[in-house]
Figure (cartoon, rainbow, N blue to C red):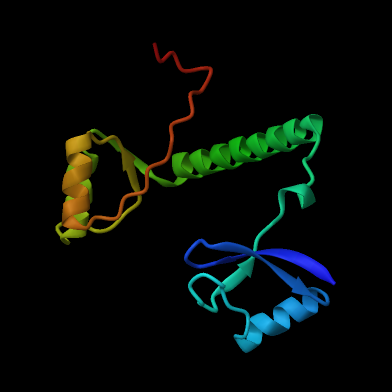
Length: 143
């Protein structure tokens, strides 16, 4: 016999005794496993805190660093792609995007800047916009 901590969709927790994990799954599939408080059959196994192994601090730090490095590399690649393939229209972005959206100008890839108010106008008009963070180039003097 094995004891599992269980929880229903209403948040009631309780124990269940089973022959093995397969017995638990079988009873869940058949809908015969029910919460003793509210009798719902929407019941799942809860993870028991004793069964959760904590990773070492050193491993966690290395995983976090690797994740951050991968994100930085991806961000750099996106910025590089935008730089090569989009026309910089600067602060005229909203005006240009609206013209293309309504067919007054042919569609083309553009990039530029917007204010918060312009962001609201673009959203209200249904203009699809994708914000890309600006990566500071060490060569740029952006004081």
